[in-house]
Length: 455
Image (cartoon, rainbow, N blue to C red; front, side):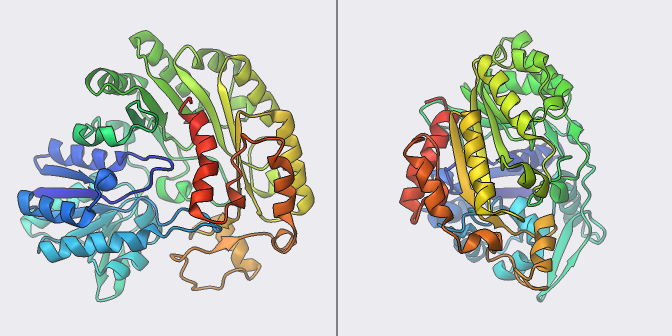
């Protein structure tokens, strides 16, 4: 079957190459289907690009990967899913081919989005195997029932087959990137790319959808397979900067060590970053000492969320204040840049705990600190349960339109004044929570981006 896969994402803060689409496309090709990819990130006229691609390729199936619903910012919201409706409508106007939805964002709101876009089929969770099964059965005219993760919209009544999160990630083919789109991903003039070394997350952060989407068990790729992908990215595609998009790169630490060895043994000359846990068990000295040699430029502790002793427990973090301090110091000692972030306003947050976090971050002294206020409430998360218990949301509320949790002890207090009191001392901190428009938000987030991209 001839399939057109479309990535509608337009957000460049941060850039996000559609890696999931690449995995789907490669899986389809390896099983005899024809898969084309259209990445709208660099298109000025998205509607024309979609219609021209459909006219040229005449696909029998059109897939849209909905990665993000919105930007998760209560002060300067952007609702991406509404923008995508025009794109999906354009595809339906141009072609009678079935439209299928997938991606992380869709997987969180399958029923709501199938109805909103008036689309019949969608896939929840990892779609490589399920979508392949779907295409094969469609071609043969076979019954579609029982396909893992398949959501079907029957005149507004959505039927869902439970998705599995135990797919053998290591067995998937290496995803070939569409080179014609790569030059859109040059955040500082160097060609950038992402890579994934595992799926699943065993952390228990109260707001995160990773455990729902990918499961709690870590499914690791073979380090040798990652090494071959690194050679492809560096050699064939001339990638110069790389980001690992694992939930936590250094869990388990032995896997992270083996990946570092692949960089070193194969002579891969790429500057890279990853999301790290500051937990001492995940950052043994032998790993930290090898990161720089392997090309790692930045230890991105972007899931720190709080540095308050009580809030670390409330946010269900696995590490301590001492871990935050020690991990940052040993990474800096090895020549790595260090990034932390705070997600303020969680359950039990007070003005005092915010002050505690900010003052503790003075001791940590990161190269930049990204500070946000308010937790986006997603279905199937702990924060959704807390919000229901506290009456922040009601049963049956449609969370597709963003709702945020901010502790009642903070919401009506002068938390802005407290955070502003730190801005003069630390101009390199990205205080996006203070932005009152998108332009102001961008001027703050570039402080974070510049460190991440090595500026």
